[in-house]
Amino acid sequence: MERAIVFAGFGGQGLLFAGKVLAQAAMKEGREVFWIPSYGPEMRGGTAACTVIVGDEPIGSPIPDRADGAVVLNPPSLAKYGSMVGPGGLLVVNGSLCSAPDAPGPGVEVLVIPATEIAAACGGEGLASVVALGALVERRGIVSPESVLAALDAVVGPKHREILAADLEAFEAGRQAARIGEAVSASTGDREPVTA
Image (tube, rainbow, N blue to C red; front, side):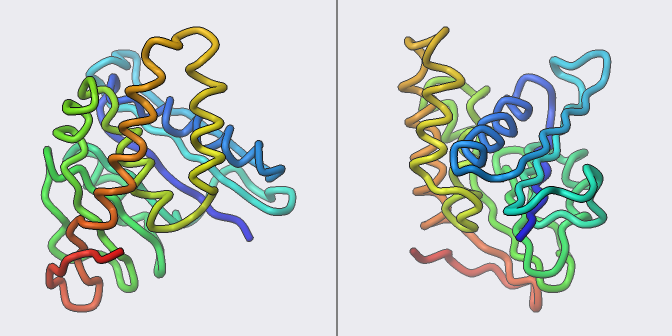
């Protein structure tokens, strides 16, 4: 099985970092991975995105036609990448900065969580992408939570042990938000609570 996930938002929200953590977690599970960053010259504060493709077999193309999931942390990213999510996919929307789309694609689940607010409570708004990663992993199980925790330790721990606790807290807060957050039904557009 192969899955493509897009992380998109403003530079400085930690999108490339979250994608790298997901890629590292998948590699720890012995899976095939592509991590493809994309950002403008003004990176911090400008548009930033990355695509992570995780497969159980060699990956045929680094450019997916459709995404199985997308994390969008600002309105321009929602407008650009929200429609890329295919049927059966998950769109995680940062409810701190944008609203759920009025008409998600057919068969697309939309999960709205206040990622920026949760991140600020965990130590800084730059952790919004880690919060969203926690929500994504909780709802879709692309990799195990344990693999993400190990990847966070491997990516952050050696150089910045002092901030690792905030990253771990943000990831767990995102998982919790996914269990109690608000989902938008792709078939009706009605909002309904997410249950564990």
